[in-house]
Length: 143
Length: 469
Image (tube, rainbow over all chains, first blue to last red; front, side, top):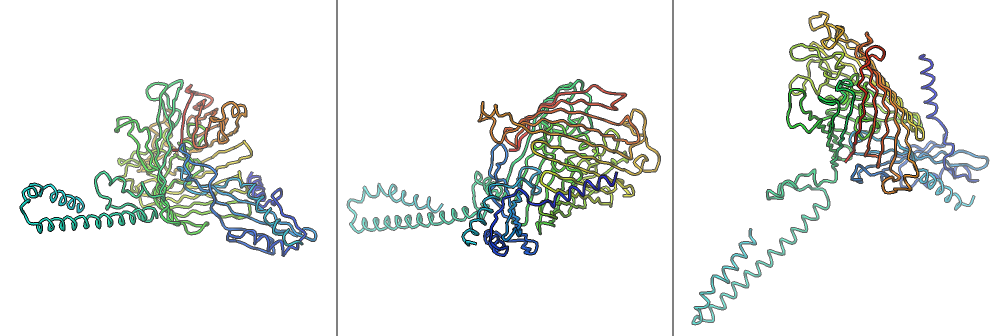
């Protein structure tokens, strides 16, 4: 029984390591280094929390953004949201690809929700916008 | 005041001198000139004073716009003082609340479980169960104060024989944010035992009544005074691990005269600090409780949590009380599966303080007081919104509106050594949220006591509305 539960937990944890498959990707014939540098440049204005070039992973700090939902019957503008971007740069053939993931959390001063941030789905449009920006900058480089 | 004096002097000068002027035809031109000079001087002084007042007013307005300085006691006048409270004008504080109202219609007036709302002397009743104002203050970027003040069954104006009006702080905490993985929290803390206790607000829940396990085994709202740490780790790209760890006051298992309060009928509910008979909610012993919860979310929509409570409940602090709990949340598309299980061990509760076996006064079968309790609930939710409703009445059924179908199974046993202390419940529900923070609920409960032998027919309908404001 314990083994069953442990394997279930392990399965769930492995799911947490899942790849960013299906997320918006900027693919380019540019070299890995160029895609890496361009991805960093595209995240300008946001502090990087991690930049592991060997693993090809960029992670930004949390940035507060406008909340998408209003609070209570009075629909007050007091809810907060924050986002963090993870960009995974991988070699692909002669070029490279940068895949973008947005992690989003929400907070509300409403009752017990004021105790902590909770995870909510990322915004696919904003993920796509970051990927498009990387692609645009790479295109400008003309490689 | 100064301005009034000047105006008064002017008036006196103009009016008071009129008879004198009438009689002054024969006075010399010199006297008239003197009077004109005096008037001119007074007018100049008045103009200067008004200019100074205007400048001061602008400066004050600037200060208020900056939001740096709340109105102080300088805003004089009894009518103004109330508006001088910083919490009213400060943009750093949010004041809100939630409230609910239920209509309960049951087969009988029998209780449907410990901590569960009743129907009074009849079998049906309106019940305004909770009115909970809350206050949240962003004192600085690192310092936050959060609180919920609960007024239960607030229609009563004073305590009565049956039950007193309940006004208490559900939680009131000072948070000092250090880093994402570790933050300090002190105050009256909502205990992280199971998940329901942390998310007990009526507008958040899809059924009107709380799960049985969350009222008898983990007696929500369960909060105690204490301090500790909480934080979040992000072990992988998609996963999240939250923890909370506190040291708090602990349960009090006895009345002042030594009468035990942890019974099969009440579960742990009457041993909470918030109903403790020790003055001012102070500790009944030297022992403190340690409470912790770890919740792991491998991906968005999946979370499993484990929590524990370890303390002592007797005056000598020799008898340990432990609660273990597990909780789970799985969300995929419109489906949701949530639940919680808990086990309690109250060592030596079956004996009185002298060590003599003690019969549970609430047990018709004459069992000893419980040492072990257990319970769980499993709840399935399905969120949906018929499109024809949106087309038919788009202003009522907006993008933010949703219906939820709910089914929940509850089971608890407040004395695990026996089966006649077992309670079971099946609840079917449907609710409508015009916006996510407001909900209209319709629930039907099938209540069982000892499911096989002594079923008491107290099934019932609960209609309720709850909203944040």
